[in-house]
Image 1 (cartoon, rainbow, N blue to C red):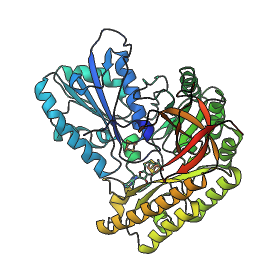
Image 2 (tube, rainbow, N blue to C red):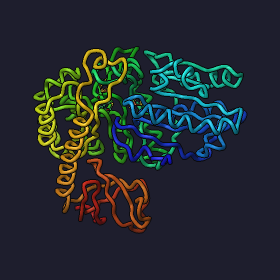
Image 3 (cartoon, helix red, strand yellow):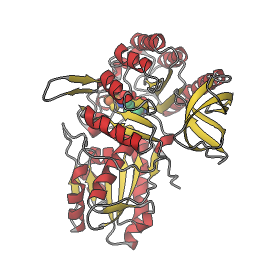
Image 4 (spheres, helix red, strand yellow):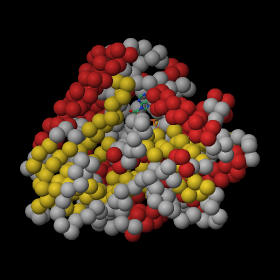
Length: 477
Ligand code: SAH
Ligand code: SF4
Ligand code: F3S
C-alpha cells in the first residue's frame, strides 16, 4: 500500500510525496530506549528534517527501524502544501489504530508542516496522536517523548527565528550512499498568496556556511558524490558573520561548496525568479561540478495572475531571467512548478502559461491544480472560482504539453555523450546501472566490469523516452 519511495526519485520542493525509511543499524548513544519508525511526506526539506529527527533520537538512545510492527514510537513527518497531502496523512493515521490496540505503550507523533498548521487542534481531532511537534522544535523531542510516556500529550509548535539545526549531523536514512541533501536555510519570507509554507515553516533564516561546508566535506569523505543544497528560495541565502560583519550570499556559498572537491557534484533547489542573480549564474557556469540545471518555478505565464499570486515578478521579468540563463550558461536545462486554475484564471491566462512553457522549453515540470489553503492570502482575498472540471482540463493540457517538451528534449540528446554519476542498479534490470547527467536526466546503461555506484562514466546516448535516456559507456572524447 505504501510504497517506500526513495527521496532520490524526487526532485525539487514540490508534490505530495511519501516514503518510509529503510535504515541500517545505527550506533546509538546511551542506554537503548526503544525503536522508532519514521515516515515522511512532502518536499525534500521534510525528508532531510526526518534525518535530523533521527539524529536527535539516536543521540538519546533510540534505534531506527524500517519495520513498523517493531516500533515503540511511530513518527509521521507531514506536509500541508495541498489539501490532498493532509488527507493522505489522516488516512494513514487511521491505519495506526490497529497497532495501538496491539501495543498499549506505542506512541504516535505527528511532525512537520501539518503539525505546525493545526497545533493543539490535532490532539483534539486525532485522539490517537500523542505528540505534535513543529519543524523548529525537534530538539525538544526527547522531553516531549518522556512526557508522552508519562501519559501526557507532548506539544511544541514554537517557530524559531534562529533554529537551523546547524550543529546536527543528519542521520542519513534511505540513502543510496551517493547522493544526499544539505539544508542551507529554513522558512520563507515570501508571501506567495497561494502558499502555506511561510505559516508552517516560519521566517527565513540562513545556516552558518562553515557548518554547510563541514557537512559537504563529511559527505564526500563518506563516499557521497552529490550534494543538493536545499531551501525554499536558495537565491535569498544570506549569512552575516557575527564577528566580522562579512556577508555570504548564495553565489559565494556555491563557490565555497564547489571547492570541497571536484568530484563532489553540487545541485540546489529551489531558485526564485525574482532573486536569481547573474552572479549566481556566472558561478554555476565557472564550475564543472555545479550541475547545469535550474529549477525555476514560474507558477503561471500570465502577469495578471502572477501579481495576484504575489510572486513579485511578471512574465517579461521571468523571460529576462531565462535569457540570462541562456546567455551565461548556454547548455543549461530548466524545470518548473506550474499551478492550474488559480483564482479568476481565464482561458487567456491559461494560454499564456502554455506559451511560457513553449518559450522556456522546460525539460520537466511539477504541475498542480490550485488547492485553497486556509489562512493564506489567496484564501482570504480571492474566491476559489475556477470550476474543478476546468482546473482538471487545464492541468491535463499542461501535462500533455510538458510531455511533448520532455520528449523533444530527450530526443535531442540522442547522439550526445554525457558524464553520468552512477547511483546504483537500474530498477528493472540489475545488469544495468542508473545515474544522472548534469541536466538531472536519468540515464540507463549496461554495466561494465570494475564500475560501481559513486563512479563517474561517460555515456553515449542511443535512445530516449520522455522520462529517461539510454546509452552505452564510452571513453571520454
Ligand atoms: N519555494 C518553492 C516552492 C515550494 S512549494 C518556490 O517558491 O518555488 C512547491 C510547489 O507547490 C510550488 O512551487 C507550487 O507550484 C505548489 N503549490 C504551493 N501551494 C499550492 C497550492 N495552494 N495549490 C497548488 N499548488 C501549490
Ligand atoms: Fe511558498 Fe512562495 Fe515561499 Fe515558495 S517562495 S515557499 S511558493 S511562499
Ligand atoms: Fe515542504 Fe509540504 Fe511543508 S512542501 S515545507 S513539507 S508544506
